[in-house]
Amino acid sequence: MIVAFGTYDAARHPRAGILVAGLRAHGHTVAELNRPLGFSTAERVRMLRQPWRLPLLLVRLLACWALLVRDDVAHRRTHGSPDALLVGYLGHFDVVLARLLHPRTTVVLDHLVYAADTATDRGAAGLRVRLLRGLDRLALACADVVVLDTDEHHAMLPARRPHRLTGREPHGVVVPVGAPDAWFRAHPVPDGGALAGEEPLRVVFYGLFTPLQGATVVAEALADVLPRAAASGRPIEATLVGHGQDHAAARAVLDGIPGVHWLDWVEPDALPELVAGHDVCLGIFSDTPKGLRVVPNKVFQGLAAGCVVVTSDTAPQRRQLGEHLELVPPADPTALADRLLELADPDRLAAARARAFAARDAIRPGAVVGPLDAALAAREVHP
Image (cartoon, rainbow, N blue to C red; front, side, top):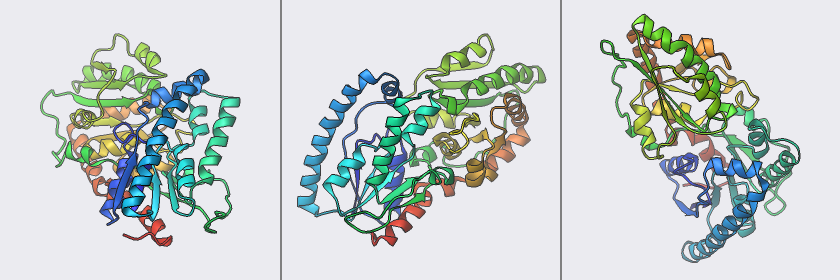
């Protein structure tokens, strides 16, 4: 038995749910001992920038840990010790508790983000980054198997010694982000992608408007292409969902541009249907170091929802999904605008949607979790 353990929130951050579903698809019995912290990503980032808020995180974390310890004791009384623990996304602290509770058990850490790398990408510097780098090292030292999402993030793993209790060498395994089943259900069958008559091309961008996402690049591209598309008789409409660091700048660029719709928030369970109602889902477009190393959630989610996904032409995105994506140079609003105008052509859109739809089987939970299942088998954790 595998126990998914921690304070993860699968509704806000679907990665943990994808790993659990994928392991179950491979025949593993997976129980969940989970006490979500209840903080959004934006709130966690705010804590990085405003350290006086950290005591609130500590109090909430300790309360959740007390419940996790109680749950763990009860679970072991009934089921015995697990064969492995899977510590969910944003588990930098949780993995320490997992290791303390189960010193000889295989501990798997889903290290989807390096804390220091993410903070740097969002403008942090100095002591905070050094402390977060130490937190990354502590978290990695507690894990036997570290799950990363790209080869580039795998290459950032520091060299580590064999675990002092088990004697086994820790190692990393690359598991693409994937998409939850709800996104596939939002658009279960291909529809050909044809635009009828004067129907506009519907484009959606959603996220936290961080530098990684290149929200200002998106805004500049839309400010360029929407008037051109209207003049050409192939109209484009864009919906932008979310709020965050670069939201005000993006909104200023698009001020007065017709065909732009803003939504500050959409509940996670409503987001798949909203995205599936569009023709094109926009990925990320920055040329920041982190932006060149990731394949974001929304690339997989957009494909699962039946959209054509336009995103930046980076090594990890090309390697994992290149033949199914519409790739444009990073940080190039003109290239993005031109590609959107091309996709407003019904034939071009239909061909792109067919390529996108062909990716769906490869991004389901059971498919992406294959490498983790193999890593667990190497440690004698079998279904």
